[in-house]
Length: 223
Image (cartoon, rainbow, N blue to C red; front, top):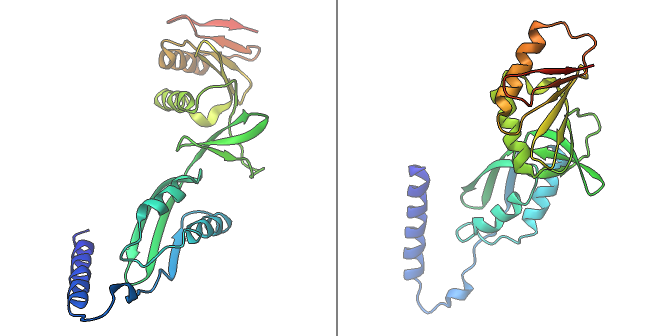
């Protein structure tokens, strides 16, 4: 970081000397090469190509005066991006490194199936082979992300879950991959999850389809 700032200071100092030493020349005639190379990595080849085209369409000027804001806005509008870093490489290149978001679940949004990313954005479901829990109901994305965090803090593994059911009362049910449904309390979901986990691991539940853990410290079974 300090080296980059040092390089910038030297470049600006050089430009100041250069401009200050020019006599009887219109400053508007001074021209610098535009950005020639933009190196972007972190997404698939196809998604990298799409994003690169959008960045090139910004008609970026020379590297000394290019605004990172325009590039940031374009990158952040891409639902696949979790984090990113933009590095200027003098005299005329940019390196952009992207961390792709992790898909966590599928959801129906206005009749179309989308992925919910860990960045809190919806992405088109263009990958037919990916298997993720399906969300029934209409939670806000932040409500799902908060519930996902609760699951991760419980004794359950998120990989055990087949489906998630969200209710207007703001509580959730889970369907495990073994087809057992767990009904959870809205007020103490971690307690409900851990209680259901302990019960499942200490009992033979061949004919049980529903574990109701909505009452604190109690389990109610339904066949």
